Image (cartoon, rainbow, N blue to C red; front, side, top):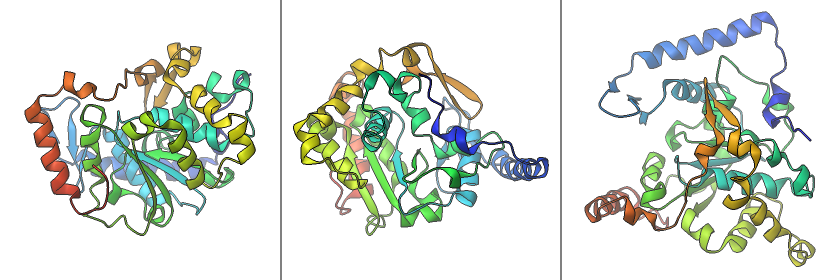
Length: 300
């Protein structure tokens, strides 16, 4: 069974005049972004926005369009993370948990034909991209989205709603939480579930239970007795997802670029940073982290 991506239902054909209006909005932000300074020494090239650095002009334009047009609902769930910090895995766990009553049979699960990134799309590179401003109102609640947009650049409506933040170890993305520098505690008062890759890897059952409670669909006692939590963890395991045909040979489009799904399935070994970073690099990362988040109450 082939499942259409959730986002496809809000991409219906629009009137020509509306399409032209959307295109002009993208052209406006593209012109602004094109004037930004860039660091040509980095790969990929980084573009300087007043709030932060971005590695893609298309994604930066998408973030700006999202700021202006995305209207969050109280029931929305937004997964916010830095690239390569366990985002694909958490997207799978999130989607499977929320939709467990609809897709109890793993053989007919959307994951057999869709990547987790198609099930939980990025605001800046899959929702608001290619001159599109989709009608997200047609999506049923709760809506699932994800983002790599820095905290201070998120749409204002998001600040009042739900969010999940995830980070990893130095080798798996811990430095990325720097782009979520919230100014020592300004995140407090928001509905935020802060997860670490290492914690979820160490105790997946406990943290998936936390996740389900946070998004408002806790596991029942009967589900726990029947092994539903464990079944979701096995469904979303690297060993299972990486072997599916859609993830071995399929592609997912981000802005104008199709990316092979296999690129999102790496080793993901906790502590593997010792094989990639020197002790001096780790010391420097710890120093920056403490300077940015000391006193925030977040665990590091």
